Each structure stands twice: as structure tokens, then as C-alpha cells.
Length: 506
Image (cartoon, rainbow, N blue to C red; front, top):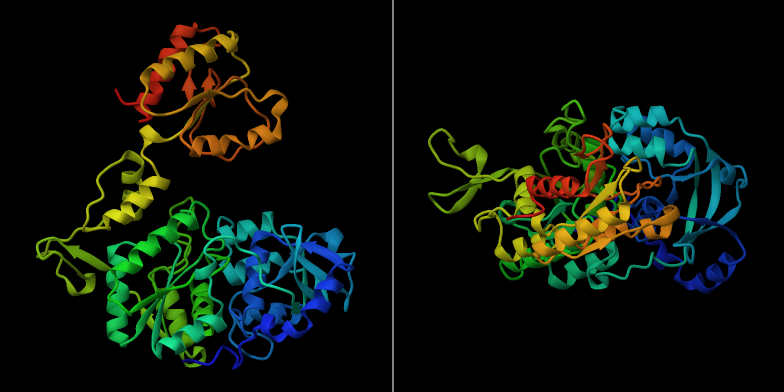
């Protein structure tokens, strides 16, 4: 089993266990900082040793060295800045050597930070050097639009790990996972990074990697922050639990990683390898376009397909973990097996593949997902969270410029929808005065499959799918010729729109 990065596992929870009571008591009297979701993820991996050799958030000296050279100031390879960003007013309220309590969910004290320094980063430099500068990159969007303008560096003392209420038995710390491997007498472990559901091809490639490395398999999926739009981790974990049954007995183990991904491509691949070494893996699978966010709005890839593999390979003598390049596998229907695509003459041999885009389309429309691609139990789980259009919810929102009776139109639509049946619940959703508490329910109603009829527009932002405006404006999804159309005409227009978009089937 490899030594942790930097030579020592920085398990701050174990280190500070003897003073837990004193730290907890002290935290109640300190300035408090309520952490964001990403900060909680980063803090957990500092406290449990997943980010070894870090024992705190980067000071300016280390931060600048990581941004410019992908190293800490002592020369250790480290490619992603781990920083505690704060707003300007908070930054100006603290000073060096001050102690700050770091809080989860406004209630749970996790650690005490002794301030090393407070600094204003050059975000444009960070964006360019770490993420290659494209303003559409999700990490740069986060950096410019979400992250605070100041960073606080300093060492941490652990009170406790963040509280999780889901999958407690699957969240192994580096120390726990290393003990697990020792108890199983596993000395060669190939780790597989994933933020997506796994299918038969993933099972095949991990088994091949294990065979080639003569190693066991660690399925180590990310359950922190991933790419916006990714399938939620609860659905994915249920898929992983099903997939793990498909491996030969005693060859595979699963543990969840509370990582906040940056989607930083090649730099992130090196970071992922370091983290897996800290968790005890001896080998790490680096995928094609590993941790890349895809393409920008112009269709240009943020990273090259093999940038990650090349950068990790360049550090192989310093990382202390063996890199296994991802080999794309394809299905051979005439032989009913998977094989690496680089071993197949596709001009002579028939192959089948389903892309991620095609899979999402089939889930959305209820199209067939064949057993050669995924296991029926996995497809069932995905369909539960991604029902086809006829089972999805939606909201029809009346533009404020409509001149007809909103009450009558609402009743007419409700009565019309109810006669179609089909198992969908329908509701008139009247949110007077833009009540924020009510509007927060809209995404939940839609996710549960409800058809909402909304008599008035809202001025607040509602982040939900399947929202359709009804009116005569240029922005209307269901376009009327004027604001004075009859109720009967509008009802027909709405019904045909819903049929055209797959929400109703006749």
C-alpha cells in the first residue's frame, strides 16, 4: 500500500481527538463562519486526510505556488488551489492569528481555523493558469460569480467531520479504507473515479484494468459537488450498489468520496490520483477527457481528450501511484461481448454503442435501453429518477398581459387535463405576491410529476425544468395571436403543445 502523499496521512480528527471537548467549548465563543457546500466538501477532505499533505486552507504563499507551478511552496506536487473564500466585509473583520469556528448548516461546529493570512487573489490569473481561462468553464463561472473576493489561509484543528445522514456505512475515511484493505489482505487496488451512473461497459473496463494490474477494484464515486446537470448522487449510489453485485466475489469494494469537483481536466486528474493514493489505492484509472466539462457554447472542447493522461504520466515518478489509462470498450453484438475499441477493426466488425446524449434521450422518451448496454435493475433505477415525458411534470404560466379571466382559463385547463387521466396529478398554483416560500415548491411539484397551471407570472428566479409561458409575447413558449383569444382556443393550443412535446399521448 502506498504511503500517503507527502509521507504522512494528515488525519486531523484522530490527531485532535484528545482535545475535542476543549475545542468544542472554545468554538462557542469564537467568530463563526458558515461554510458553503463546496467549503464543507473541502474541509472534510482536509480533516480526514484525503487532501494530505494539507493541514489547512492554503496561505497566499502556497496558493500562488500552486496556481503558477502546480506545487506547494515546499515543492510537493499539488495541482488544485484549496482555498477558503469569504466576502470582503468578513475578510476585513479578521486578522492574523485570530481563531475562527467553521460551521456546517449554521449549527454544527466542524473545526477551528487559526488565521495565517487574509489575501485578495488574482482571480483572472487563477482562471487562466488553473482552468485555462475560458469564461464559460464552470469553475471560472463559480470563481467569478459565487466565490468570495478574499481568501483566508491557515491551519485547522478538527472538532468533527461534517454530518451526513445518507449512506453512513459507505463513507470510509482514508484511515478506515486503508484498514479495510489491510483486513482483506488487498495490496494492489485500482481505483475508479466516476460522477456518472455505471453501465456494463464501465464494469468491463474496470475488470480489465484489474486483470492487467493483477489488482482489486475500488469503485470510488464522487458524492460531493459535480458538474451542474449531473444525475443526483442518490440515484447514482443506488446504481453503484447494483453494479457492485455484478463483479466476481471478493474483487470489488465501493466507498463514497465527498469531493467538490472543479472539472479542471488535466490538473484535476493529477489531483484525483493524489487523493486516491491517500485512500490507499496503488493504481488509478485516468479516463479520456478525465474531469473535463465537455464543450463551450461554440462547440470547442475545454480540454483535449488525452490531456489528462499525458499530464498524470508526466508526474508519475512523483505521484507514487500507478496510472492505468482508460481504454474505451465497445459492444460486439455478433459475439455478445465487450472489447477495447482499439483492438477492433470497425470496418469489418459490427459494434454498438449508446452515447450519454442518446441515453438521456431514451430515458426522456421512454425508449428502449437494451440489456447489452446496461442491466435491467440499473435501468429501473434510472427510470425512477428520470421518467419519460408522459410521466414528467410541467408548469403552464400565464403571461400577465393576457386579458381574459385567469380563473376561468385555469378551471378550463384543469378540467381538460383531468379528463385525459394517465396518472398525472394536476393543480392550479396561485402564488399571490410572489411568495418565495410557495415558489420554492415549484421544482418539487414538477419533479414529482405534477402538471401546474399558474395564473400569474413570477418575478423571482425559479430554477426548474419544463416551465412554459403562455401568451403573445416574443418570449412565450405557447404562442397566442393576441391577448384576447377565447378560452376554448387557448385550451386547444395548450393541449396540442403538450402533445407535440410528449407530455400527453393520445
